[in-house]
Length: 476
Image (cartoon, rainbow, N blue to C red):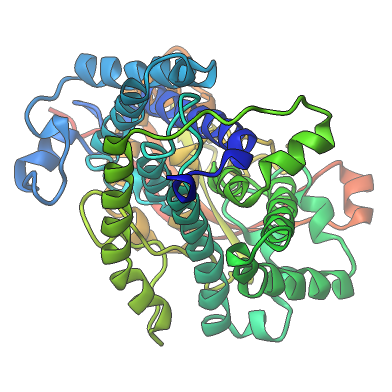
């Protein structure tokens, strides 16, 4: 059926699928390198304990039936290898059915990880990757032209990401309505990047322009995704540009990159190929009937499941980053409905002294991404996701956010757990674990231009209070 496929979007699909596979690759590598300390058998929130009281119907995962650290590592690295193969074009080199099976395998592999990841995997971009990955199963490969319906489902997903984020802001913090939120956000965001200091120091009128432009990009522009070309392509281009602005100003894992990938579904591939000077692409041919039936079935499923996120969008009590089913299909999204005015950081320290006195020397642990040493310029890590660093930001907001994992984290520092220490940038006790560990809460703010020149510090910090009193391992 000619209406079923869109031959002009061959380049859009090519770029979209390769980029989506690359994000899957980042997700699997992140899981493989961090899981032992976070959710491993001896981790802070072990999977075996979790699946003991959470039934498979609530968290479908292969690890409901068997778990070992070796098995998890093999599972994650299998996902990484399959993702890498698809980045290289493996899905276009096999029959259509095999390509669909490969995308479905990636979805199942990552779903199993997310559903036992607990608070470490409670971020909206985990569900976003799973939902986009599910739709990719029905995008086809080089053996057929891209299905129009799947491209529209991708745009519907992108619309919910952007429009949901825009609505949660308007309904949330008053600073979004008076255009002052960016007076604070670049400084107080979860994990600043190397340019965040400079973004924060922009003149306040420019911050107001930023905020107003954000409202337009999230509440007006997404409507254009459903218009004919070239309007849809222009809307997608605006979204891509705003997302690149966010990439430059902070570290939001793969949220911004995946939003850019979804925007490719609205880019006219034929026009882009002509712009790049690529040769004309011949249509791949009609899709087989069985494929059309599966795409239509997937579309019907998405339409049915869309009732819950649409109802949420229309609700005055809108919730953000919520899944309505255990398979993370057709979710609701949103970010930063409220903005912190001040940045509080938990600084973790240890000492080798057996007896604590006023002269005890405390040495600070260094984290890879979160602010610590005031002289250290924030680094760029996105799209890689530093899960411990992100949750340390939440711990600074309230101890309640860290209640279930902060104690086990300190315990692993006291035992010198190698898996936990590998998550850190600097371990001040490389040979023998400390006898005591404590945590203190500091108020952080970006320095001024003058302070930066005089001290070389990007941050100024002030002690607020004790966060965790000195703790040591219980004696036998």
